[in-house]
Length: 290
Image (cartoon, rainbow, N blue to C red; front, top):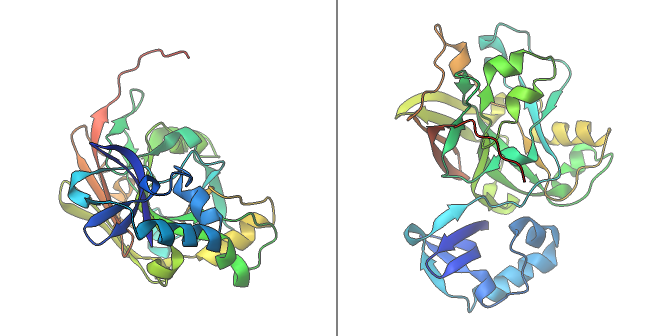
């Protein structure tokens, strides 16, 4: 099952992707939340509501709608650093023996095809294709064997990183949470349709040039291990997002670095989850209050 948020000439909606069509679920089931995470967090009852609504809901051509961010504002966005063997190697560092996590700010979450900002304060903007996990159930002290019980689905994401700001502090947080630097989508794919996420290809193209070409099998810490580790410290809750690491090929690893430029088109894709794309647009430093 693939759930999306979309805009069409008839208005916005929550959609079920079926082939090249979008089923406008809330047209016949207006009680459904406009946030797909809420529907999936309801468990079997949510799935049943989707299936029931889909029987009579109108359908739109996928090409005629604009896909929006498929998640509401997350409570937590967590990213793991150096989680692919080849990426750790290209940075000149040893593979970590302990998971290294950082926060991305909730305000960085962005639509799958919306422009991404080149910061007014930096030109060291980099790309990182990532598998993103959507948490659908509260979990604390969750063992690896039960990690799947709290996963609502998966998305394709790009962990845009402002490298000079990232390296300026040990926590990396300032370089990882700029506005627009967490696009996800194009929809949420439920685990049954995503299949085995331990063997999925990840790719990133910049202006048509393939920069990253990896596989989740190269992860140092797999998704269940990540969930087990995090929930030893705090609860993961519905709507939380996990950016699970990136393979080799980031711009910073080239000599000289291949950072992004204004006007560049960045496309990232995770196998079976779909692709998202953005054009890099210059930010104008303008004071905004309120």
